[in-house]
Amino acid sequence: MKLFTMKFGGTSVGSPEAMAQVVEIVKGDVDAGHGVIVVVSAMSGVTDSLIDAARKAASGNKWGYLSTAETLRERHTEALEQLTDEGEDRDRTLAQVNALIDDFVNVCNAINILGELTPRMMDAIVSFGERLSSRVIAAAMRAQGVQSRQYDASQFIVTDDHYQSANPLWADTESNIRNHLLPVLEEGITPIITGFIGQTQDGVMTTLGRGGSDYSGAIFAAASDSDELIIWTDVDGVMTTDPRIDKRARVLPYVSYNEVGELAFYGAKVLHPKTVQPILDKKIPMRVRNTFNPTFEGTLIGPASTPSATVIKAVTAVRNVGLLTVSGRGMIGVPGIAGRAFLTTAKAGANILMISQASSEQSFCFVVMDDRSSKVKAAIEQEFVQEIAQRNIDQIELLEDVVILTVVGSGMRGTPGIAGRVFNTMGAHDINVVAIAQGASECSISFVIDEINLERAVIALHELALEAVAVV
Ligand code: ADP
Ligand code: ASP
Ligand code: MG
Image 1: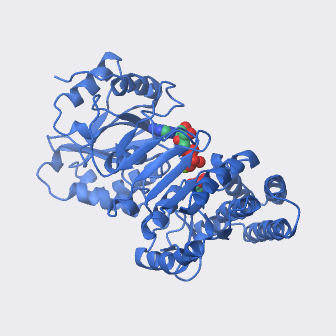
Image 2 (image 1 turned 90 degrees about the horizontal axis):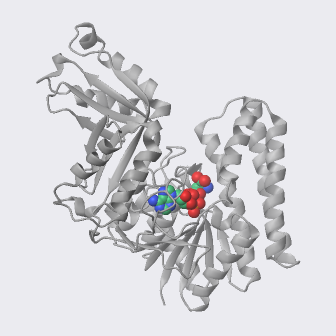
Image 3 (image 1 turned 90 degrees about the vertical axis):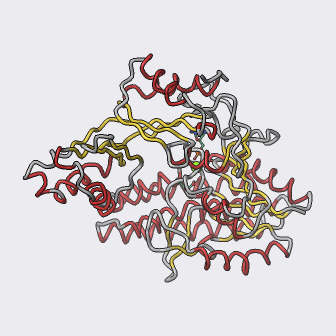
């Protein structure tokens, strides 16, 4: 008997038909005698609609959030009615769905009265999506004879109070899962758990960040010592590029933890960037599989790095970023300028996605998300106000409407000529490269180009990932 942790994403639980598919997949493994921990997302589109409703509440649009509440009620009721039989279990679950929706309206009313929306309130609001879907799915499982019970992950995952992107406190979380969840499995019950959410030590609801249910799945897999973590989604696996940009995208049969970490960090939406962290040390294998094509084995993700014949395995892009450049003759030989700039950036609440330094030491540049870039620019100008006045540092430059492109492949380490191939390809397509960086794990190269060239560049680089060409 094996223990699997399976996470099902938004599309995989987005309709009664999709939920029925989820039940079938889980039931197959349970009937075969395996233990399954099921982690689920909100139904597709629900998290976005909750965020929208909260904003409407803050701006006084009461009709807006009441109409969201009704849509949520209809969608979950319809799924429940299609997937369960009339009777006590359906009635009890329906009452839970209605009570959650009433709670949601109450929180919106409070936001409406206060006229402000804090990150803490936003987490309380978005938590309803997973709390609703998980209850409906648990009932659907029981209707098909799978003994299952719904759990809010906030009972297990303890986090800090970094709302909207909370960090799990590992020791508490692991002991909760071991002491309170594993006994449930031993009783032969299949737990259906909300993805995405956690709770502070004081009992306040938090979330792990958008797309965070993948991370929840990995946390449960690691703490329970699962034999495998399976991320069930709406594509056949991790692909050579975003299939929405290039239809020729192919499924990668195997990628390493490192490679997938780089892919996710640099924009491949298929996995949350933190997903591999909890499973790294225990070397728990992970698979990305398609709920709607369940016989296909998907992509296996593990510790070994196995270079492919193409060396470059995949291409990704991050949109909506800004490139900041700090330059000036007075910087040469002056220690600590970069350190101060990065510290200031962190204090302005921005994460640095990429850093590049010119060898002349006269300038360095780095990339942050667009929504923070002006704030970071102002904060750095403030930090270096004296240096700028003395002309040791020039005005800080902010370049918007740029994107980061990343090529990933573990074979890049020690394969000469890869960077040359990448930049020759850009040159051949007349695409100007603004800044370049090599990932610390040496399995990626990232660079910045103008946003208008994004699709052309991805398609051109994707050729390199599709064709095995001898590198000289
Ligand atoms: P889920 O709701 O299951 O978590 P997401 O929408 O978050 O699913 O992620 C899956 C989507 O990620 C796919 O539908 C696909 O369009 C997109 N995607 C982007 N880049 C890649 C890639 N390299 N490989 C696979 N899918 C990708
Ligand atoms: N429902 C959350 C979101 O849409 C978490 C997830 O699905 O992973 O961001
Ligand atoms: Mg996702």
